[in-house]
Image (tube, rainbow over all chains, first blue to last red; front, side, top):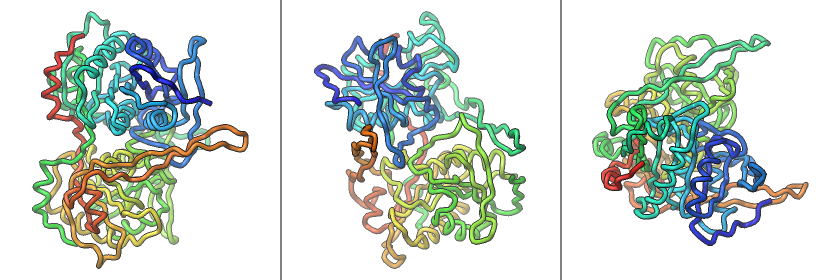
Amino acid sequence: MPTKIKMSELSILITNDDGIFAPGILALKQAMDKLGRVTVVAPLSEKSAVGHAITLSDPLRVETVERDGDFFGYAVNGTPADCVKLAVSALCEKKPDLVVSGINLGPNTATNILYSGTVSAAAEGVMLGIPSMAVSVASFSKTNFEPAARFALSLANKIFQKGLPDGTLLNVNVPAVPQEEIRGVRMTRQGKGGYTTAFDKRNDLHNRTYYWQGGKHNQIDSGLDVDDSAVMENYISVTPVHYDLTNHAFLKDLQAWQLQL
Amino acid sequence: MPTKIKMSELSILITNDDGIFAPGILALKQAMDKLGRVTVVAPLSEKSAVGHAITLSDPLRVETVERDGDFFGYAVNGTPADCVKLAVSALCEKKPDLVVSGINLGPNTATNILYSGTVSAAAEGVMLGIPSMAVSVASFSKTNFEPAARFALSLANKIFQKGLPDGTLLNVNVPAVPQEEIRGVRMTRQGKGGYTTAFDKRNDLHNRTYYWQGGKHNQIDSGLDVDDSAVMENYISVTPVHYDLTNHAFLKDLQAWQLQL
């Protein structure tokens, strides 16, 4: 069982949704090790598309994990948001100075960020008052995480210099191309597109119906000021994401509805 | 196995996160039956706090459910968001005219809406282009759902008259008091408060450590224009919620960071 983690310098909490044994989190840790004291607290198994789920009805357990023969971090049988909560509340001796979630295999852009465990972990960070970012590479297959890891380190430095507004995280998406083919960095807004879901209806060996959920990305808006579109054009996309979901513009119209009991 | 559902009139899809056998969804169905043809597609078991999770790595199964001896709806072994997707893509013959999620036992206000399966189901509705609302009662124990069910029906009528902007749902929270004690209806913004998480560290019978996650609501802002605060003052709260998470104000500042590769 883990004991309290002592942190005497800049402390960085790393998590992900692909699980503690994923290649992306190893690349991220190696980059962040250059910046400060890194603590890894990540799901034991893959938790993609769990969104902001948290575990209230089951006990959470923690185990220490080695990679390449060295202590790597703490694995939790929960979601990415659970990992951040548990790290901050129970595992870390002091509050981390930065939460970095990733590096995710697959882009987290447009409305897909609602489903993303990677982005939700960073959201949990900002809800706990910690500057946070999520980092993803726009490839679903084995990829080179180096350009994303390098940029994450550079952006982390910038966050420590500049700070972030309360409640706002940075959502970073890196094209899956060699470093020299990346055309630059764009500050973007969340796109309006997202996955168009399709269900494949099948029968099992007992002739009972089941459905597999799948889909493909449906890009709606274009331009280098939009997250999914910028990444497709081989730019790194950085989107400031916050959690005031109120549609303030419509709130004014809604007043005129004069709703009665 | 369900066959395609024929809908010849106004069609309303109902779901929740407390599960298809919860009392709140029964009260909601009884109210919505007065408005049109209701289809219930809800999780087989409780799925509270699953957020916007969807099921990509397991097959989804559907079974028909009776309540009080009559056909009630379709139960799915997935999340609330799965239920809406599967209903719209595979179970309903035509696209529903309205999605209503609830009636949830427990308020969904302030930053807690990020964790809410109830609100995420309505979010899935609007992402599929369907006007949607989420309805919750601010009590965690057995309660009277009648005031909430009555208001949901009245609001649904209003939505059909007035329409909702693309991508915006209405998040409704009703105080858990008798109808005559409800003081009115307030159009609100999402509060800045949320759960302050606490973990209870325990040992199991094999002396292995585990953690239970809990917490209590931490109200930050006050006033009848804020969701959690209005409900505490015995007003029904209606918040327009959308899914553009971009912090547009900060996006301008971020341009000045001049990030480099």
